[in-house]
Amino acid sequence: MADPMRIRAQAAGGNATVRVLMSHEMETGQRKDSAGKIIPAWHITEVTATHNGKPALSAEWGPAVAKNPFLQFTVKGAKAGDKIAITWKDNKGDTRTDEAVVS
Amino acid sequence: MQTRRETLKQSAIVASLLAASGLFPRMAFAAYNKGAFDAKTIADAVKALGGGAPAESKEVTLTAPDIAENGAVVPFGVATTLAGVKQMLILVEKNPSALVAKFDVTDAVEPNFSTRAKMGQSSDVYAVAITADGKAHFAKKEVKVTLGGCGG
Image (cartoon, rainbow over all chains, first blue to last red; front, side, top):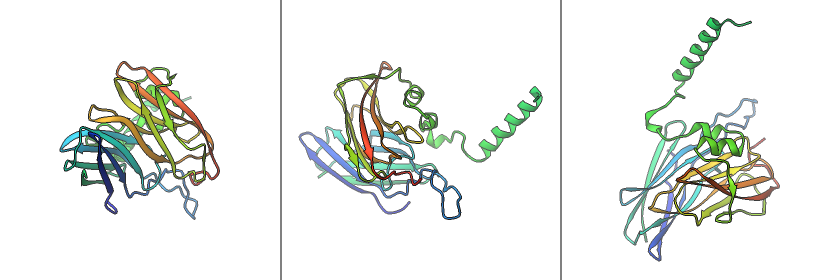
């Protein structure tokens, strides 16, 4: 729901290396605020990626993934001009999708 | 001593509370495996995902720094040369919840992922690959943390 994801997809030798930087607090649910109350867990739970509309990657994340998560993976058989779309869902039900073109 | 009637009543109340709070299966989230992420130990998390007892393997690689200056952002890479891998996991043994991330491997991606995770304290980190036959293979590395990442 926050800022757009930064996605870089580069074709290299028949595959594309995709790097994504997502913008998300990723609260573990372990921290306390200044009043001593636990800040509830708020983190991305699922990430999916599609390559030209076909599912390529799905991942589930726990609260331990770092804030503003970084993700890198390699899509097979991708070439310049292909579309990569990344979607995340968090445990509050928010979701966000961003797209990039392989360069 | 609690009678069975009381126990049943209590669990019904708890169940309805849980359902009301929306924690129960939301169809949109079909896949999120809460049981695995709540598991406290490596073995439990792997079991919750359908893997057998993990066996150390040279064909799984975990890339991680020896010392992480900032426990809130520790870069990890997991990769494997095994065939037929269905899932790859990153686990931090001494974190409050051991499972950090799970990646479903399909034919469309290479079994090679990098991300950044939080580590509460110096601990062993495991990369586990679960193959289609349910066997779990792992690689582990000790990562020292100078500043814990869970805000504790």
